Length: 313
Image (cartoon, rainbow, N blue to C red):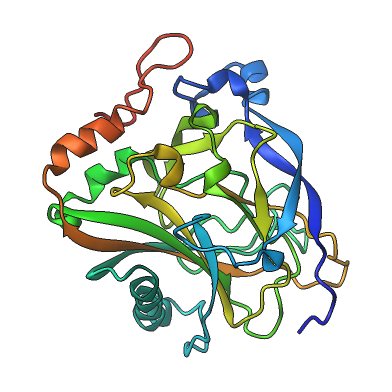
């Protein structure tokens, strides 16, 4: 385990959506035929990512949208699909119940990350195939869930309020996370105008589907945090959606991998699992009316005026 003094912050390059997509639907890069537009979909911007371990009091789900918990898993191999989807899913559900006090949970999926996606085939640090076919690459800045996702949860929630949480931890039970830790945005520093609704391919494994998720336009007022050297007994829990929250900026935590300034050539590659757990609460008075109102926040039209067909209100 690491005994290094935690740095106060890390200066990094964040991966942001082009600001021209504010208030319109952003197309998926695979659907953009113009090479110039495709190259300009995203850009990098310098960000300062503060050490969340130094916050006093520590960050919480209710205030910043994320918190660190102790989670000494009893699962000896988190890459074993049978163990991951049974015993580990059960552990994750208990974590969410303890944090939220919810009545019940439903685990929707999990994904693995294990390497860089922009390196050539055969490079030792390139992403590797994962047990469930999920993309192994370390991800850029995004939020996974938009109000459109609620259409897939109708049978699960049965008219109840719900909230989606991402539970993120190492599958390497011997080493601290020393490469590409996860940066999370304090949700109270998010401006609605910077939330960019985007068509995206997504899904738990190799079978991908049309989704609408969120990208982020840069704003200097955004406050970023990370937990340096997360240990094999720590788990990062952060909010991804919440039907109880009328303010769209407080429903989710944007997140993305960043370089760790203490990484060395000998640092073991980060190997992580992220599990999405849907917390179920009390019955809603009028779920369909509320859902329609939230989904109306999502722009339907691209910048050229055409309507996206990837998800319907």
